[in-house]
Length: 275
Length: 246
Image (cartoon, rainbow over all chains, first blue to last red; front, side, top):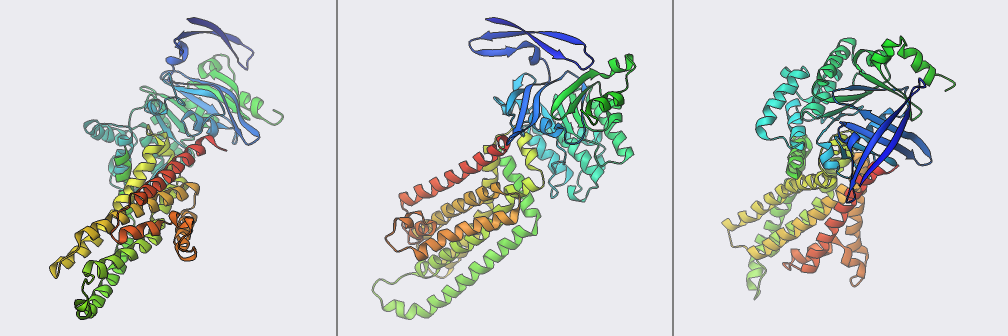
């Protein structure tokens, strides 16, 4: 049985675009052709805490080799959304698919395609950089030969080559953040989710992280959250603005540039006082 | 995956001085008790020879040492289990495990296994200590085996309970005190409840007493296993609820 449906997305600049969605339904197995190809897609994501709704009906799509910025003021619900995208928090409603695999139904398979750096890098202070990265790679079921080369590669990528045998607890904040990124990408995931990756870094380190994210987009798709406008302008292909738990804006940055609009004006208009 | 997690746990455990201190203190206490009993045995030996069916060195020395070990482990296990989940939560490292393609069961069993391995070291030392008596006499190896079996099951219970309490809190110390309180409660149960009460069926140490006297009772084994299963399942449920919950 083939089912056709229409789905509309209202974009802030009043442009309306329709998306045709084809659903193949055979013997109860529903395959969504459109989302199957997307590295990461979320549909109707809601999250309630007790009586308050923190996230309202978020639809989010990350396309291949794209860098998507989740932009929003502090407390907009970015971290909650990110935690739901990575399976750390179950959505109250809605679903998340990673490479077409449902995160709730098949969490183990879905998570193999996922690399995640939370707001606080999840590092065991008692382990050395090598030990931690090795442990993460083993959790992702990398075999021994692949592991060593992946370890060397990721250390070089993140500028950790000469820190391998140092205890994580003795590293500076900037290096700990690098280890945090390294643990998220060592298994070469298709989807990389970073929660405020540049917070607390000095300008040089911030630039390095940006370059790193740029490089990652050649092989993976990246979504990261931030509240810094320049960061979005510098590295993102597309921006999603979140305000009070709602997705209020979704646009390609090239389109923005073509139309001569500034991201700052839009951000202020959407999230400023009175909105 | 379970083994990977267990190895990491052991690495972290042995990185801290706590593991070594615990091993040393445990061994010190047990050796002290052991030597004390050996002294008693040597004093009693002439009198024992006059009895028709005298208790041997296993009864006089090894049984009390294992009984003491059961109490000492009751106090020490919460100190070991307190960090396993509470500290992961406090240091935000639980996210790393939850985002990895493994199940919560893997995480909990990995931690359980690592603590088992560690406490088996304590038991291993105890067994070596007991076997050292073979130099000067003969041992009732059956009784020794029954004691080892008993204490093995007993520590699985301690660890399972400790893990569960650790999963409830983000403060390791709170987890330690909680687990210690409950385990002490089980001990006090023996002391305050009268001998025929049904409550004694729930006492961990009463079940261990059977093994201590050389009786391997399947009912006790079943109780221990159910106890472990219950708390491991509760731990997994608790971690899962955190994802779903408020």
